[in-house]
Structure formats: C-alpha cells, structure tokens
Image (cartoon, rainbow, N blue to C red):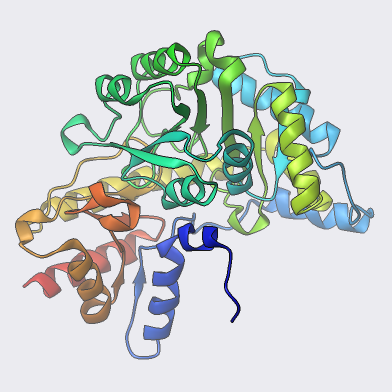
Amino acid sequence: MKRLAERMSRLGTETAFDVLVKAKALESKMEVVHLEIGEPDFDTPKHICEAAKQAIDQGWTHYGPSAGLPELRSAIAEYAGNLRGVKFNPDQVTVTPGGKPIMAFAIMALVEKGDEVIYPNPGFPIYESMIAFMGGKPVPIRLREEKEFRLDTEELASLVNKRTKLIIVNSPQNPTGGVLTKEDLRLIAGAALKHDAWVLADEIYSETLYEGKFESISQFPEIHPNLVILDGFTKTYAMTGWRVGYGIMPPRMAKLLAQIQTNVNSCTATFTQRACLDALSGPRDETNHMVAEFKRRRDIIVDGLNSIPGFRCKKPAGAFYVFPNIEETGIDCEVLADRLLEQGGVACLSGTCFGEFGKGFIRFSYANSVENIKKALEKIEKVLA
C-alpha cells in the first residue's frame, strides 16, 4: 500500500464495535450476554416505522436540502427549545446522518493546527480521535468518581487559555452516566466566554434521565453565539440504525455545517427525516416506557455489582451505562474485560476504551433485558471466584 496521509495515524476508533465483533464470533462456542454496545435494545416505535414506510410510498426517496427538510428543522427547533426552555429558530438547525457528523463537522469548522480542545476523560472516544485528526491538541479533563463523574469546574478554569478553541461537554454522560448541574453549566459557560472559546454540548442522552429535569448549557443566553448543541433521534427513539442526528447553533455556523455536509454526504435520507417528524409529534408511550425500564435495570445492575467483592459502582443519573470501579479486584481493567468475555461470556468495555482516566473501571451497558443482566451478574461472580 502506498504511503497514506499522516493524519490517518491520528485517527482513533470506537472500541465497542470491535468488542461486538469479537463477542459475535464467540457465540458459536458459548452463550454471550451483550453489555458492550451503546444502543437501546427496544424496537423503534411502530408509528415511526409506519411513517417511514408511508414516506417511501409517497416518493420521499430523492435528494433533500443539505441542512435538512425545512419542516423537520422547524419541528426540531420547537421541540428542542421546549425541552430546554429556550427559543430556537429553524435556521439554527442542521440535520445530519447521525449525531457524529455534528461533532466531526463542528471540529472541522473550528479547529486549526495547534488549537487546544478540552474534552471529558473518560469520555466518548471519538472526541479525542476527531480533535487529533483535525490537527488540534486534545486536552483531557478528568471526570472523577468522587464527584459523581461531574466535570470539575475549577480544574476547567485552570485549563482554559487563549489557545483553547473548543470545550466539549457531555451530559448525561457516556460512559459514566454522570449529569452536570445547572451551576456546573453556568461556570462552564463563563470559562468559555472568558477566552472566547466555543462549547460543543453533546446532549444526545437529553431524554434518558432518571431524576430531576434535564439541564442544558443553552439556558444561559450569553453562550449562544459560541454554542453548538448535538442531539438526535438515535437514543431517545431507539433509532440507532436510522442515522438521524442534528445540531443547533448560530445560523452562520449552521450554514457552514450544511456546506460541509454538501461536500461529504449531500444530505440525510429524506424518508427517515419524514419519519422523524412523526417521532417528534407522535405518542410518547413507548419512549416513556423505555426510560422507565432503563431505570429499573439500572437499579438491578448497580445493586448487583455492588454485591460483588472488588466492585464499587455509583448509581448513574442518566444514559444507560454503569461505570464501576474494579481496582479492589486487583485485576487490570483491560485484563478483566477480556477475561469476562472469554471465560464468562459477558461482553463489556475496559474503562481505558474511554481514555487514560478510565483506568481501573469497566463500562457495562444495561440496554439489555433484566433476565440477561441477572445472568451477566452471575457470570461475573463466577469468573472472579
């Protein structure tokens, strides 16, 4: 193979998909409980599926505007604004195939070689990957167990400087389930504005919250000129394979991201966008049930893990992951993750899949049935015994 561009050496990956492949290969030899992949195990609500079928029959199978269908952008602006208690306009919305393009396109539009980008660690691994790929300098901010995995705003203030171009925040958070408070978000906005830095607020789990109301950094109007919100339909409506996400940002930035989309993938599939209109306006029974069931599973897996010697697990306030500390087992987290899969048939992810500060932890997704979660807990105990 001819020599590739140097930037390819800086491109990371999402380990969950690698572990999924490995776990699937093991299924011919043993039963495997899948607690590695971050997607709801529920079917997409029927009314959304029917809307997509109807849209195909009606001919919504051609190109659409790069920024998204106007009617969907309007619906998103209204729905997302109501959720956050903020007024958004349709020209602030860009619709993309999944949430990751918003992240990638925003970093592409903002970050130049040498610019510093602060991101949560442990955190979604694609943050660091895309920062480095675009030539930026990744600056991790540690999420600590003793702070309920909330970002330390005093530490953030010490990291932000004139070279900081972007601060990434994620709440509710992957992999820890941590949730930022209103005061946390106010201080983050202030730290960003002090040095005219942008904020990318990854709010993809905005509706998977178990206690209290969702707090968004967008509630502080002064940050709006420097804010990109990432959200989408994948987690809330069990639509991971549909690939529809969106960003909300200043209109000029929305135009630029739509222009990047024109260059990369033209547009988001039109029939899926029509189905998303139904997701926003249709019944909430199935999505509400999904969150209630996640909460039930959360309580079972947290209690179960805390009863296993060597495990210490915080109860997450959002998303659908637990991030137990396993240091007292005396086993390296990467070794233990491999052992749980290969010996116990429990697919999970080492904390280091989410950055250097994930060492000593393991992530389990509880997007699986109560029966399988209980089975996994038994398997974990057997492996450790």
